[in-house]
Image (cartoon, rainbow, N blue to C red; front, top):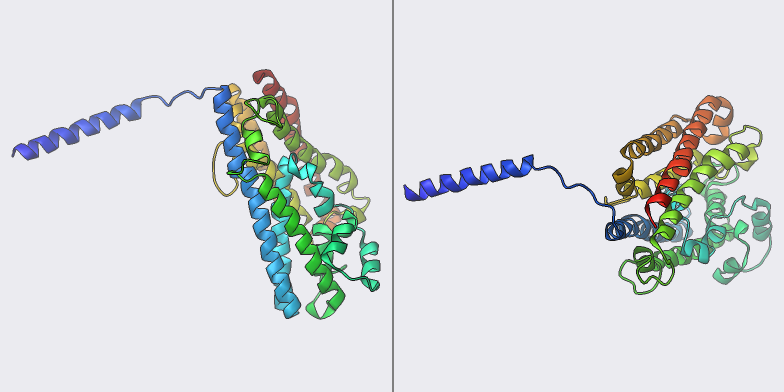
Length: 357
C-alpha cells in the first residue's frame, strides 16, 4: 500500500511539474556573437558542406552509369544517365545560392557550368582525331566541357537522342567530361569538409574569431546575403532580359534536356536552403537571425520564397515552348522573383549591416 501511495505521489508531482514546464514561456532568442557563430556552423554543416558532398556523390553516380553506358550502349542505360544528369544539375543549381569561397578560387563555375555552350566547338572536336583524354579535357576552355557539354552529349541537339546514335568518340568524351567534373566536385566537397583543419569550413564558422580568411562575422553574413541576392537577380533580372523577353530562344541555358524551369526552381530552392538552414538535414538558417530583429520581414521573405517557387512550378511547358505558350506565367514568375530580390536587397541586407558590427 505504501508503495502504491508513493507511486501516486511521484506520478502526481511529475504531472504538476510537467504542466508547469509547459506553461513556462519559451526562451527569448538572443542575438550575440556566439549565437551567430552557432548559426554559421549550422549553415556551413547542414547546407553548404552537405550540398557539395551531395554534388560529389551525384557526380560519382553519373560516372558509374556512364561507364555502364560505354560497356552497353542501350536506351535503358542512356535514360539512366539522362536522369542522373538532371539530378546532378539540380544539386549544382542549389549550390549557386552560396557562390563564394572555393567555388570562386577554384574557378569552378567556368570549368563546370560555363554558358553559353560552344556547341559548334564540341562538334569540331568530335570530328577530329585528337585523343579525348582526361588531360585534354582539363586543358580545353570551359564552354567546351562541364555539365552543359554532358547534357548535349546525352540528350542530343534535338533533345531526343537514342543510344544507337552515340558514337565511340562521344562515349570517350563523356567519360573524360564526367571525370573532370568529379575532380572539381571532390575539391569543393573537401574545401567545405566539416572536420578538416584546412579549407573554408572553420574560417567561415569562426569568422572574426581567429579566422585566417574572414576577418569579421559581418563579412560572411554579407557574403551569404549578396550571393542570395545575386542569384535572384540573375533569375529575375538578367535571365528575364536575356531569356524571358521572348526574343531569343537560342539563349536558353539548358535547352537539350527541356529542364530549364526546374533549374530555376532549384536556384530559388538554393536561396531558401540558406535562409531556413536546411538541405538534407534541418538546422538554423539566416531566418533565425532575421526573426529576432524583424518578425514581419522574416514572414515576408519566407512567403516570397514559396510564392516564387509556386510561380515557377506553374510553368508546365518546357521553357523553349513556354516562352510563347505561357508568357503570362513566365512574367508572373519573374515578378515574384524580383519581389524576393527586393526584400533581400533592400530590407534583409541593410538589417544585417545595422545589427552586426
